[in-house]
Each structure stands twice: as structure tokens, then as C-alpha cells.
Length: 59
Image (cartoon, rainbow, N blue to C red; front, side, top):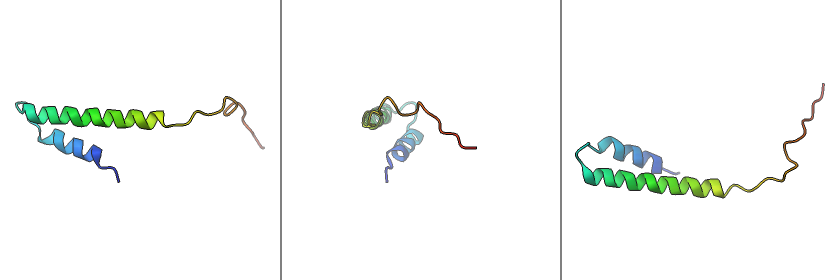
């Protein structure tokens, strides 16, 4: 179970506007989430060009 989104939300709710350490931690957590999302997107395999060009309809 991935709880990284929950952790970022918890950090964001506890960070005040005058808390530079909390803001730095929040930014780092968001950077890590961005890297993870990019890795997931890049791991999606390429589909062959012939997929999705035909629609089979039966009446």
C-alpha cells in the first residue's frame, strides 16, 4: 500500500506559513512524488501501431 500521498497531505496540513523547515520538507516530498510519477509513466510499454484502429460492431 502506497501512503506517500497521505504523508504529503499530512505534512502540508501541519506546515505553517512561517515554518521554513516544514516548507522545505514539503517541497522535498513533492519532488519525490513527481519523480515516482514520472518513473511510472515511463514504465508504461509502447503499444503496436495497429492497435485501436478498428472497431468491431455486431448488431
